[in-house]
Image (cartoon, rainbow, N blue to C red; front, side, top):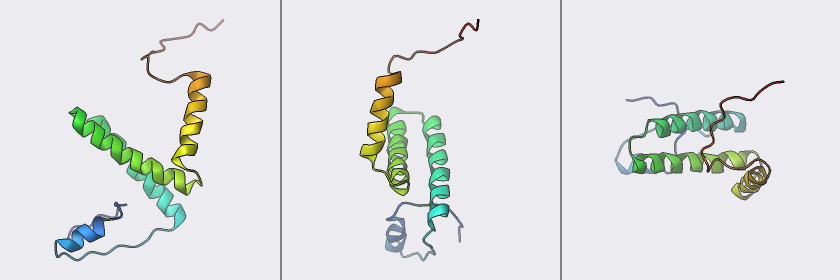
Length: 108
């Protein structure tokens, strides 16, 4: 029997059950849940960085976005709140659309 010890999507137990297999799960306490969401975010970012095709990259970005929704919620915010902060930062500091790569700054 494989052992996973990882955060999974909410419908995974039903999917496993539909295959006739048994499984064990538990509900994480808030602190542990946040820790596991952060771990999962790191895993998904690594998978995005390893993506070889645009379709795979978009699939991984969707996973990252799903985790961001959950992280916003555990921090008492919505994705609209996150988007508001993103927009404020874009107005003040810009986005990343132009591909500007800073090489150095002269220090007088």
